[in-house]
Image (cartoon, rainbow, N blue to C red; front, top):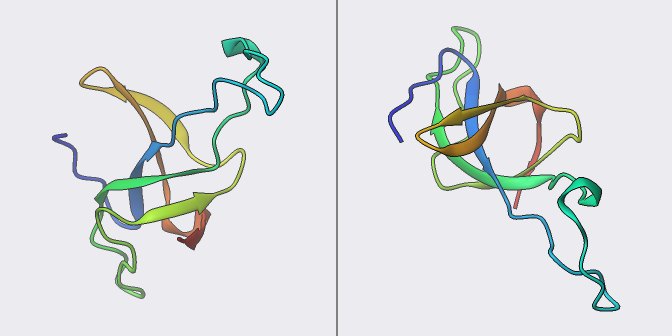
Length: 89
């Protein structure tokens, strides 16, 4: 993926939403919950006050409404500030 986020922003590829519930019922796309974890695919350099702590390949958790969904090279990714990331797994 050829993208370079600026400052304290990161690009995250969301994890795949589950296809079935625990009882084996198939869940339609409209009812699937948005995944709250993903993999960091690109990072900025950070700000002058704080260096970037995340690195490419980190598995992270983020808030339900964090980031902006964009499509790059046919893949849907999220771009958000480093502060929107809640934890590294």
